[in-house]
Image (cartoon, rainbow, N blue to C red; front, side, top):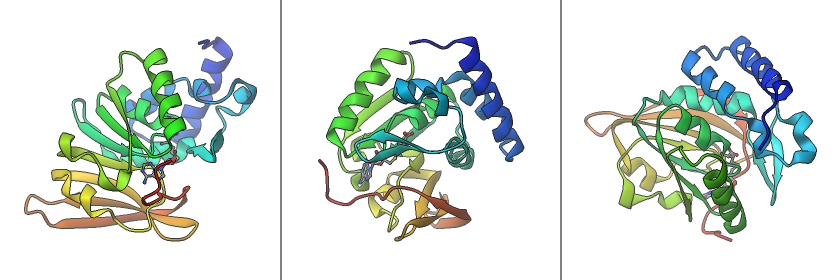
Length: 216
Ligand code: SAH
């Protein structure tokens, strides 16, 4: 797939915009500079790929707004070699950002066709990144690969999934947009060495819902 000077230039502008919005981690900004976001959108929408907006990716789903991806990733404080679980693979963009930061990414999608499409896309275009895709229910996580250094949920969760809390390492972090309605509160839940949970809140966001018992 193509990544020409114009697209690289638009990406550089997006990175500067994110910096102005308060994203200051240079490693993270570098990851945004490296991943061609326009590859994740239908070619008809190329012009929109570097706007700081969410975008429909078909099948009723959206690729999150770049600022939201940056904000959630920043809260996760990914270190190279970390094992990260993502709920809601969607287009695979968030998974790529995490993998470019050096994480080994395990990502779950409940929508079968989207899972299949994104798995093929990632294998073809990012064969060197450590991303493992799974079809299934994110509420259950992946106990067979646990524990994780970090868990990131990219759909609005009406409740905090207990199974996922259990799959966090001591001192692991979960970043989760939590709330029942259209709007959610971004929360970072840190599991103490003693197993106790510490919750921090980071403002209001809007996500598509994390659906229960509804693999399709
Ligand atoms: N991270 C994605 C954006 C995700 S949009 C990206 O970078 O493009 C939210 C995704 O969560 C949708 O694809 C939706 O199908 C999925 N989803 C919703 N409920 C889920 C569940 N219970 N388990 C796994 N995936 C779920």
